[in-house]
Amino acid sequence: MTYRVPPQVENININQTVSNEMINLQVTWNQPTSDRPIQHYEVLYRKQGISSWTSVTPNPTARQTTIRNVDKGSVYNVQVRAVSDVGSGQWRSVTSLGTYRVPGAPTNLILLVRGHIEVPPQVSNIQFTQIVSSRMINLRYLLHLDHVTN
Image (cartoon, rainbow, N blue to C red; front, side, top):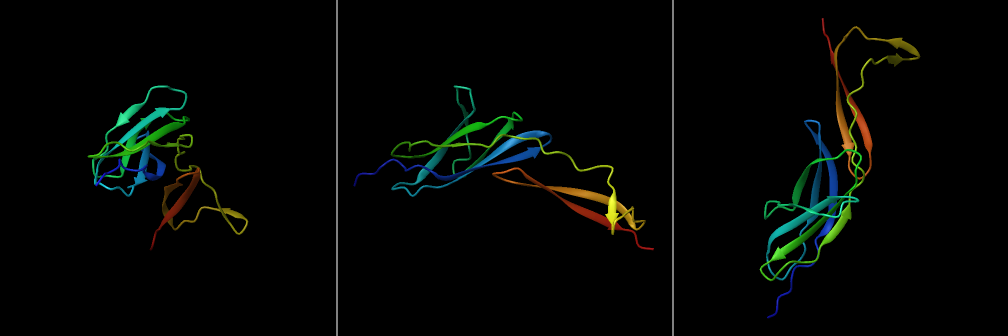
């Protein structure tokens, strides 16, 4: 029986994460259906406009990796391919959306209740949680109010 190199990986997704003020790109993909077991994956990336590629070595069995500390406001090209004992498959390429810095939680809030500006005396703490969706910049905040009970 003749075996073939793995086909291209499928469904590459790039999501931006922010950790300790660093912007990271979380890259995930689906395993291709192959005649032979996939031994590992190879991942290359480069900032758009730069000719040289940088290699990232993911865990051999994982279908994800993180590109750490990318530049704010830049677009990145990413390539992934599967490797088996027969050889390396073709690269699958994808381009990230421009990276962005998520703004911090709002400050100096004014609460508008029924047309009147109020700061409810029963609120002791206001906390915000950022929710950033992938593929498009969609920033939302969840508002958590701690109520004081007497």
